[in-house]
Image 1: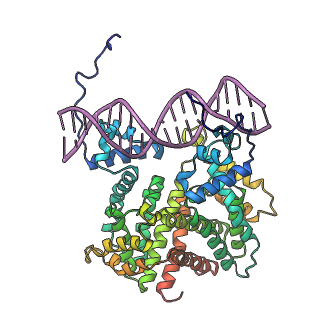
Image 2: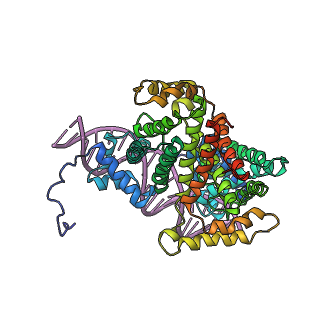
Image 3: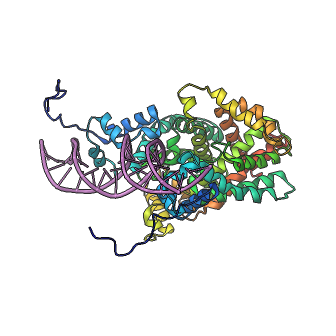
Length: 235
Length: 235
DNA sequence: ACCTGAACACCGTTCAAGT
DNA sequence: ACCTGAACACCGTTCAAGT
């Protein structure tokens, strides 16, 4: 066997040195650049310039890696949510909810890990607390507060994860536009029997021109309206 | 080499014969019995008594299998939602939402596939239509209807998928009760600094004694209250 | 038209060995 | 204390060959 024409490395290669911080930063970068499927231990190790095994020194396995990556992303949301000074508690809840929505919609994988293990997710817990502190300013029972915060978080995370779902490969690679993709569905819908599907027909135009963020906001307003009613003792 | 002591099969084995219906039924059974991780093409093929390759005659891959399995489960929800005769549209929406919640909470994997491809999910589309037909009885613009149905579906599916998440192995195998599991979290929470986490402290008791179904219902009521207000022209 | 199963390219995880 | 990388057990998917 002939030796390789060039020797990319003189010696076995210098021992790499990482940190939990570096592991999480690169994991999130991989996720953001290429989606959930791109985060493998081999790809992450390559990015860190080391071997696969060393990642296990920092996290117990893939689940914990994702739990901690989630919390890493939430740090930013917490920062913006901590400094706001809204007079109205309902407005403050709206602002935090929108910030959380934006973070999750960009990263649909996050939805499945949010607050899954508060032991390793201090920022998740802090965000829950910040939302809850606003309900402390409303006239509610503690159970109503608990339910209200859970409802907001459930709606935000569930909706964002759903909306951020990866569209089919044709749209991602640019061989089909998002509009064409939506149009394809709407055409399918318009072809349905109008007698059996009156609602689908009635909202076909709305669907075709819809905006995810606007749709999220509209749903959030329904919850907040219900909450305000409850706080006013009218529900 | 000695021949095997017994011959389990005289000949190579009879050629198995399946159907899309059989594939989906067994896939759902596998999912229900042992969770998402248990659904592999090998395990499914073994259950069907055939080879791995034959499943690909019925579905293009795992994603389509899950899309179709989801629709298979939704058939039941559609059946119960079609026959109800509620006088009040809001009540009807509540009834359908609860039925959908029950189906998804038992099968958290379903959340990620619901209405992902209406081309192979006629029951998903039908359910969306049934919910929408109730909004047709309310005084709303078509955009408000579209947003309302989206909000309900997003909340139901998101919350159910979250609540149905597999608890840690210790709870599943019975070496730890659900109450002990919750208590472990609450203890962690109670140990937090009371000045920095007033909300978490205030709802610790509520969390410890909470019921998922009740929590879901409370959140749903907030959305429905907001919707009723909107239909009455007061929002 | 439908089924088979070996083969392929990948994955998360382990662990004896190194520094 | 921390890093390495071959090895293991498994996965979805393909495909030439069968019936």
